[in-house]
Length: 218
View (spheres, rainbow, N blue to C red):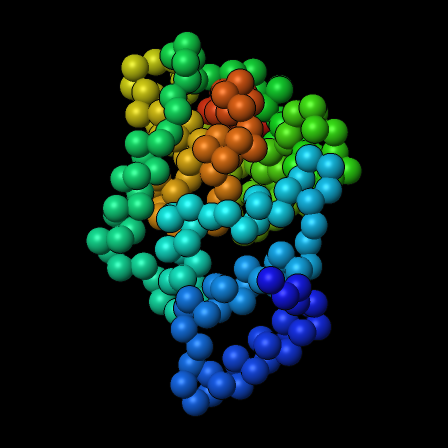
């Protein structure tokens, strides 16, 4: 099979886009081109593999194709995707949803992990501050996602261990584990589902969001 260079692929992309003025390249053609460009531009290094980018499941594929088409998923498809992802959520094996918020804060503030320069044995960070405000003392945080400051307080969780808080505790766990269970094309990473965070780490993040003593709820 002929090896395409990034320059050659860029030329092919331009040709497709120009042709698109008249006929419009299909989603399949654009997907195939993107896959070729990624494979030509990236390489496996250390424990990081190109397959992490190129191998997508039906959820990501459907959302990407909707994005390329410039329109949201139809409601039936969105509900079906959410149902599949809801079934894929791994709930805490020991039944404990709430961890140590102090450990959760460390995880939320860490953006390390999953790059070739990181140790393959190190724990990944959640990088939560890259998308959310979580603490009123923070002066630098992302805005891709909503502010999570006072997350538990706003939702009336004064005691995460109480039966009254059960639904919100479970929702918070599920949202962190697999956000697409609640929003088919959410921009939020499926932290647990994709192996970014392990069960213990998710438990600590839930603690950070819901523990009344956490800075999130001060």
